[in-house]
Image (cartoon, rainbow, N blue to C red; front, top):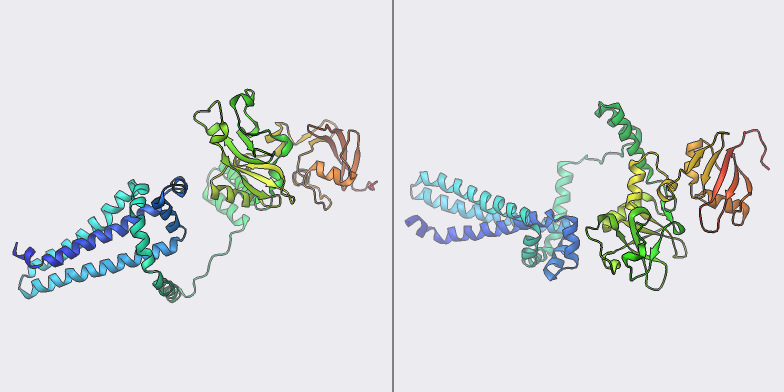
Length: 421
């Protein structure tokens, strides 16, 4: 009792410092443990929740401030514990010195680190909302020190790791070799290589090559009722909602992900679509869909008009399904179907990239990406049934070209010695 009375002010200060350490430790765990859905919900939440999002917009600043305050608090805490130990040693109570040192360390670990972080991980959203206001003040209070702290951080990295260089990007062959060596099952290794090739190909394929063209999907103007679907699930499983005064797609609903489907005003369940230019790569489209947590992207041409849509399901099918084609996804027919006479039947939305790869031919330079586009480019008009076009090594005969429907053509690979007409 005499010891407590003697060191009461120091012990009280140490207790306050433990609470402060618990505050910053718990804040760090709670904010950085928030999931994507929780962050998105906070963006439209109250003032405290929006403060959390602002703090997370600059994670390096936030983490540096938390570590700074934690370091300052812990140094002060152990300085006070050392003062108590020195006084006890002066009084000849050497056995008590070890007890004080061990107790102070244990108290800081349990109550200043472990316990608050456990609570923060269990309830990250609640803890983040509670600490947002004082944490914002603590972060802003060290803003003037940030240039110095960042400079010390860079200096320490250069002193400790002066010759550290980033590794070069692995080539596709290196990744394939790593898969082969790391997988004993050759069938599994082959599937993994195919997926890897498809993933890398996303950076080369443009969105307009993968998109569902505008005339191959249905869209609905609000208000949308369940009866408007006429008992059929739209192609791709997405209900597309347009602007109230135009046919431009503005939002989408994934019917497969809805637990209950209301009979009226389905547009209230819709999420806005993102807009991407026609020349964007599928890889960039996937990054943007994931960043904004959306499932549908509207492909916009140079005039700002919607050409088609790309869905997350389309991209995933392109990666994991082999072979995957737009005709199979959209029309449920093969994009390239070989006939008995050696010719091929193709759909108008079949990409030229797919034809060149499947038939191992070099096609002429063109701005078009599909068979229909190439035919229009050569004919300088809309294709009609019976048109015959010689284009590079290919001979294309239009079999059907309905005004509303799917263009079909017969494709033949001409002998190399045959002169072009």
